[in-house]
Image 1: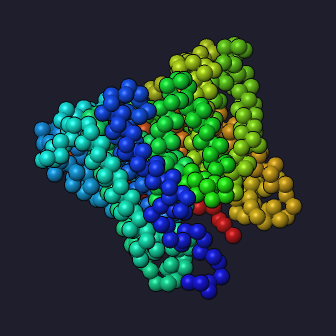
Image 2: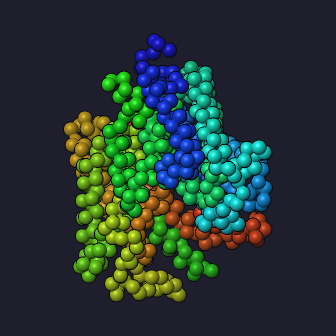
Length: 333
Length: 306
């Protein structure tokens, strides 16, 4: 592939697990802090929202969703504007069985992953026939469909949402214990990052990233790019469904609002802010997003204003996201 | 039944007209600048709020609309020259994110300036009544005004795009903007003019609907998604497509909400139809969009690109 005229760009570099040697240290410290800070503050009983276990759990759940979106958006170049749908579907796969008194996690989690796989397979098969802005809009359209579908289910609360009284029961893993729930989410976050790492460095992942750089060339090389992209799309959907199921367990309250289109926009923002096509970028993005949300909304009810301005500025001026800043800034300094 | 159907048909037409006003600007901006503007709905909202305040200041609704149109156009102008101009070269992802940021900014600014409550716009006496448009069928005057003014604007746009020099440049820009630039046309000014035109149209839509629904925060966020459905179904960049698709989507959405539940009863059991009716009718336009994209990804009336 070295003799082709156009350079295959940065997408084809081998994303290592931690990035550059200097970035590696920061990433490692960051991930350890993400685990240790909420746990310690919980054990010591610190009453500060930003370091609380609840905040940490929500953060880790959304980070899993962002990591899954990054697989298709960052590495695959498939700009999905409807990724929040999978969070919602995953959440309702916990909520609806729980409504009928079926509390087994061995039902909830496979159901969430299964339902999202199916939804991703059907919608992805249609969405991937389109490109560019059409793809953005059709993924959004399907998410809106899911949103209105759950909105119209009056039996399960409709607009008012649904309260989950019992968390999923997973034998020895007691999710009613907040610490256990957080640790489970954290482990699953690490597993999803590792899964994405294995995927993007595999032959399959090379094809996906090749499609991002130059799909026509991948087709010319004889790959059925449609099938590869659809597979990646389904994997991302299933991962995000898991995130949704975890989030439902944490919040104990779900509503269709979890999948409305501004939520999808926020997920995209996390990925872009953190840095697309980087393994830990989406986690950075999720952390910064949630901290911004939490602190700004504590200072002012008008927190969307500074937040929106930051969003516009970050699009205008930050290239490669926070991950890019960490990797570059360190090696220059 | 037939009277009710006619009224619903007119309501659908009214929604279609509003959607067209929004979609026209969206499709122009996308067709010519290749720019995805999620914040287009904010201009719709801003227009409605300008109009509300000006109605109270001037005491005249038509005068307020006129002034508010100018103000909304100015907002569009400033927005384009300040930020959006720098985003044309970026990819669609950046467009979506930056304009998503603008939605947040606009919603909060309106919240700060006008407060959290919606503002109702009082209509002048002569627009409040009802008219008998067909024997035995009474329809609110103002809704008729919306439909007629929308059709007038559509005709005006048809003339502007088909018969004027600016329209010629717009059409040329939509089919090949690099070539237009190479021919020595001042692309920057053209882009700004088109963006401001889109802003004015969106603002007009907001002003027209505000006396019925009142001007409220976030009023643009739902309808903008529907307007995107319209331009995708119609074919991005095509004015004709936007017009036909807007009327189609407006009618299908309105009539679907009224009659789909009844129709479903013939196919599935009654209690199932009662639950499925609202669900399917609110998903209907998205189902249509998905169908169109699956069968004809370029939309129903794609512009000719050379």
